[in-house]
Image (cartoon, rainbow, N blue to C red; front, side):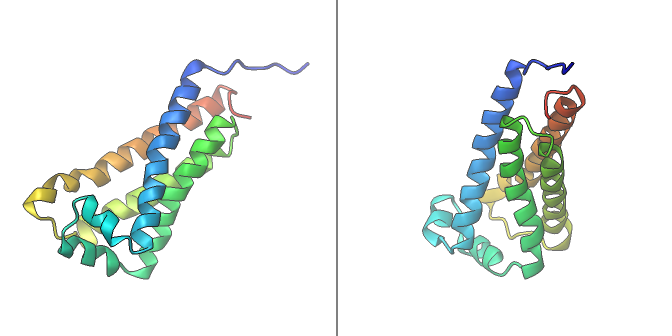
Length: 146
């Protein structure tokens, strides 16, 4: 006999909010990588910050892609109630942590006083990625994700 686990209401809330948050990350990734300078300027980036992103080493695209697209895929898989959301969010967390280390230790971006609040964004992203990975793991453990 197959036991079915009722989907908790918060899975839909977390899944939709996650998809919106990570969808914006995907939009930002696309705009930044298609050299959307108008987008970057509208986002408040000054020329040194734009130059920083344009000069990013090629190897940094791997963790950035893992972080952004792992999170988008994880969000969709969470809404579909699939266990694969756990490793997708895990890869996203890994990408976010590598990006944090790169941007805080290896090559910090040139932040003008107007962009000083951007210094905390990598930490916010890692915390959200950690919470999403934990949430997906907890839902898988409870049998909500199949």
